[in-house]
Length: 77
Image (cartoon, rainbow, N blue to C red):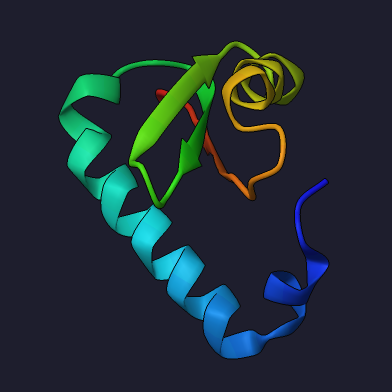
């Protein structure tokens, strides 16, 4: 299970979100036009795309079961 202490520390959480959002920005052209959910593991930069949150989470959990991942919903609207 991921360490909840990271989530309780506002500075650490902000750094996590900043790093994940920067990676999402890098992925924009690859993900453009897709209607999906992306899960990003910010430390590695790995990302997982699923049609639903549950599917993206399952893909990420297979590789990073004890890490926090950042989720973003993408749609073509």
